Figure 1 (tube, rainbow, N blue to C red):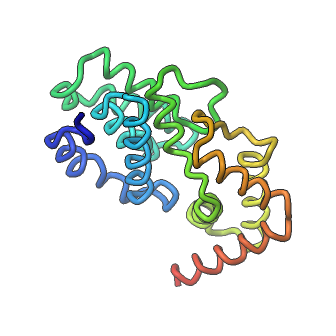
Figure 2 (cartoon, rainbow, N blue to C red; figure 1 turned 180 degrees about the vertical axis):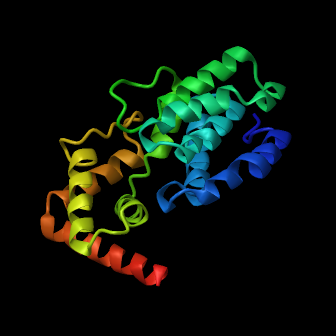
Amino acid sequence: MNRTASLDLVEFVESKILPRYASFDKAHNTEHVVRVIRRAMELALKVGADLNMVYVIAAYHDLGMAGQRAVHHIEGGRILYTDARLKKWFSQDQLKIMKEAVEDHRASASRAPRSIYGKIVAEADRDMEPDTVFRRAVQFGLSNYPQYSKEEQWKRFQEHMENKYSVNGYIKLWVQGSENERNLNVVREIIANPQRLREAFERIINEELRIKS
């Protein structure tokens, strides 16, 4: 069984698609998309999904971040579906499934992804490793609200953690018993302890501010 995407497809994505992430914020940059691709491919191997499809869905999933964040998943699906270059590798039916998978990857989606491909990339996009969860939130705040004081950054960070990752949050995982599930439980334990959460925030924001300076 082939365990990687087609070489010519990888060459196309690495030269034409991945460089577009370099201009995005730290929470959605090239490092992020590479991690999502790696995790998505691992999940695809486990469930027997088409590796070429999964590879491209993961590579395109955040391209919509070049526009409005609130609709980036919709825009990303459109970018994939209208990219005529992909017709070299995929049928129109495959491209429709891939478009829907990009649309369905967003963590705040109110319904389950429509296909296994949407579930794979949605799960791969949810890196629940605690330090990564907290760092991405801090990085997003610093990048998008540079005018905020540290206390304002803390309030935004705390509200985001509660709304998205707490036991009452909207985050959903699609693979039972996964590493993500185990990590999310750790994140929730920290969120439930304000002192531990503040300590994590202070450590990370100070590190990020030192990097910026």
